[in-house]
Image (cartoon, rainbow, N blue to C red; front, side):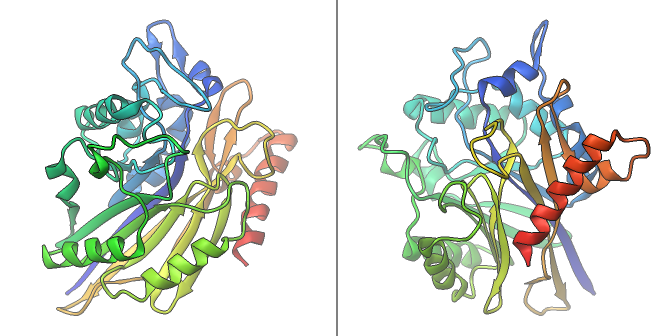
Length: 325
């Protein structure tokens, strides 16, 4: 028998004030319409994982945008509604609202049935492993960040945010394998912002991690632009997924473009699980009158699109293709 699991991976969910303004309703906020165009692809995967870069506020606020975020918690409800199974949370903004904000974020994800990895409320949670069972395969999921923007992680709670350490990541992946994981996904918040090519730190760390047979797939976010997909040895590395939901306006070229990377894990008989070459679907954040995140190819298949919109979508598609060469 052959087991097969498809996994959809997406990049930064970064809730600027213009994003929550677009989601505002008479009764609060509804982010689901903004993300709805991604629904078929996200729902169509066996497992869908997002990256929540920002802490979540209480429903009544206060809400804060860059540089120290505190986002409306209704975004978690929308992520669950469109089909995500979980969100990684280790990022440079993880402690923007201190330990209390970190706890509130994980409590909110729990309330909406979203799994999480990367930050923790207790030492026991920090030591536990997040795993998913799909088609008879157990998939372990790990998340780490390069830092926290110079903000201090509570000195008596160093376990509350997973920081990148090659040795620590490999040890965690081995522990996941010992606990029964057939495959291990590693999410890394890394890279140089607005740069499409992986920097020296990314390349060095990726090579080091790819040598470990305990790690199946490495994928990243934080740069806010798409970075290439490469194979290092036997390990696929998706260096940068770009922004998923954000509004960085015209900070740099490509901040409105992201990826839904699709990874397929297969196992024949009792053999090892391996990842096939990842495929990808470009996404485009349209900050127009109806703020939407488009699945580019799906949107382009519509007849009667205005020429200006079609041109923007085609440009996003071609931009991603040029990075992947």
